[in-house]
Amino acid sequence: MKHYILFISISFALLSSCSSSNESTTYYLIRHAEKDRTDSTNRNPNLNLEGETRAQNWAFFFKDIPLDAVYTTHYNRTIQTATPTAKSKNIELKYYSPNRMFDSIFQVNTKGKKILIVGHSNTTPMFANKIINTYNKAISDNKNYNAMDDNDNSSLFIVKIDGESITTAVEKINR
Image 1: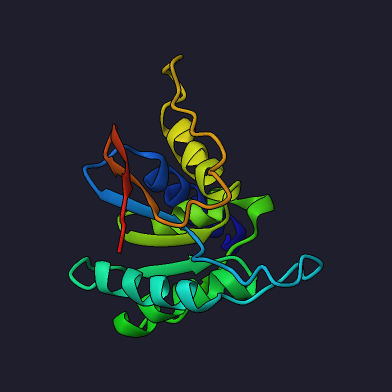
Image 2: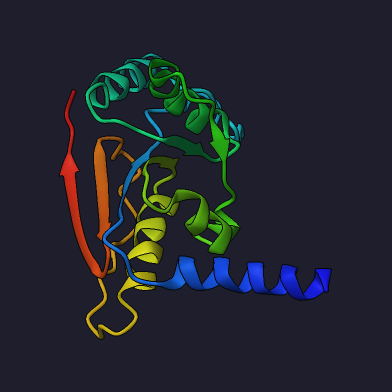
């Protein structure tokens, strides 16, 4: 009997998460700030001074935007970019793997929330594409953002999901 009740509970939870609702989810996706390029062999560099300033500027940009979570990869530059915003919101950083971006667990954990995701020049647009294409399966003209220029540390991708409706925007934030 316990297994039957557990099965029903899990089935109900899955059906509830799949049903359409007017619940709004917003993803803000940015690339890490400027990194230290003095050692080309360093695969995990820190931010340089310009990057540290930009990370603080991101925190200022998000000051009046309520966030429920801040996700970052495990690299120094993404963590250092995300930290000022997370601290200003009193939010503990959460980590994601680019190999499992926007999987079912991430979707359930972020549904109905406002989320900041800090990534890289290739993973940030790829993550936006994954979100958009997951929700627009029936649309043949899916949005596909290309990898960012290696010097682009100021683009903000915004993906908003309202029930069955999805809107996207890319903005340059020069601060």
